[in-house]
Image (cartoon, rainbow, N blue to C red; front, side, top):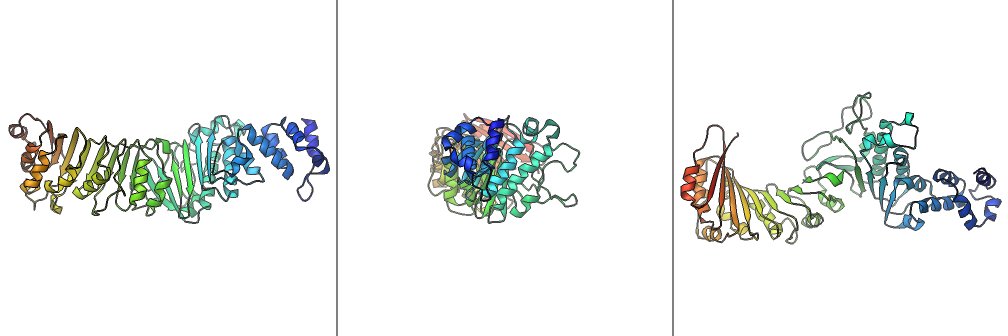
Length: 483
């Protein structure tokens, strides 16, 4: 080893950064053999000597981790965090647009995060970074072997993690940051990312949550409006983060593999349609959407998430379909909608899904909605056994018999519903349920009806009445005390 270090000394840098005469006299193949005896850290020291040693040392360092130098110019680079210090020192800047990096248990996490910041700042092409940690980042300092045990700091490691987020936000030309955590969207300013800190407000306490706050102790927490109304983003654990940069925004997604439900709304994220192509959640099973989302972008998003089982669409006043073309979704089982226009749109887009067997929606009589408006929806049902969930938002100015009025079209539609096996009807008065009995009695395959009465007080004796009208149908009555 001392002999090799002597070679580095005799092949010192000239003022132009070129190798000395002794280094130039040795063929590159021989240098490969010499440098192969160095450790990774010694290779990184050699990379600082001159451009020639930089090229040789970095190439050898990357090859030890199964990466060839040509990979630096490909669209996507997948690597472990062990190569980040080499990428930081390489005279050949990273040309990849996407970097996927795995932090292992035997790697210096803090050191890797510091190197990542420099890689992000140096690479002009990099637009997407995906980091995965072998364990919760809040505990990763316990395994950080790159620094002495007495100097391992949870606070310092999380500080460097925030530094990587800030470096990515600095690359964006837009000033909007969108954060997705636990299925909730948060919106903020890119200029504020550099002031985010991690951990508990009390310096003496253990940082078990992630707080986005101003650096100054006297500054109030920076508000981050969200789709759920939460004003403060807190993370109990960090196993992964995806960072995307586009001309309009910077996107951070935490723990995307564990996100099972998502609420898409343009209220807090006006450019949501431009974000959808960048989002992918392998475990997503429940989706809540609102109007204002581009039909093409939403359709592509649904196709990319075959594990989706439930979709809920909030109140709609638009007649347009949710997607540009109808989709036979492979996993969708439940559609939930608020109002007949909303369920009509969702059924037009996803009603042909082969596993769809549960429809739940609200009828608003005060808006002129009744069972006759259900005809276009109910005709599109393809399942062999379908459960209908109807909630009636009763109004004093609309009579119950008008909601379940059976004209010829409504009667013929109901008679053709051979797949509707169970119905759950939620209302606030026995009069509305009694008016529904005629419509329910027409359904040819009906086997069970559940009446749910939402009452302010008292009870409801309706079961015997329903059983007399609906012969050979199982009847269940439930009472829920509510407002």
